Length: 61
Image 1: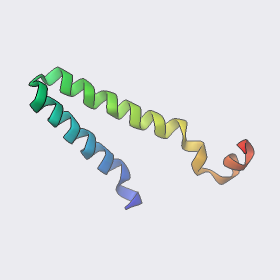
Image 2: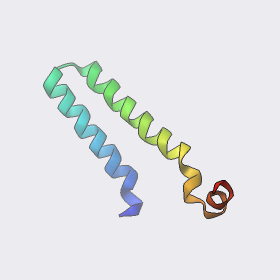
Image 3: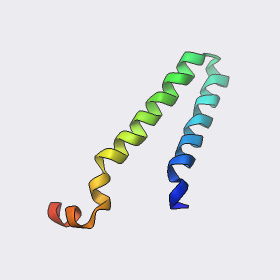
Image 4: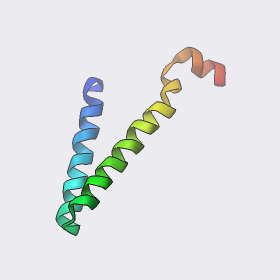
């Protein structure tokens, strides 16, 4: 389950982009909402990556 977390997030964001496309009927809005969600998700993963490392987490606590 942990192994496919990025894949599940990717599919979820793709589904959200498709829903945006069906509601607004605008491809560019759907594409940029998908791109924005991807940047937000992976940016958050990068910014919070130090929390996964026990030594670094103890350093900041």
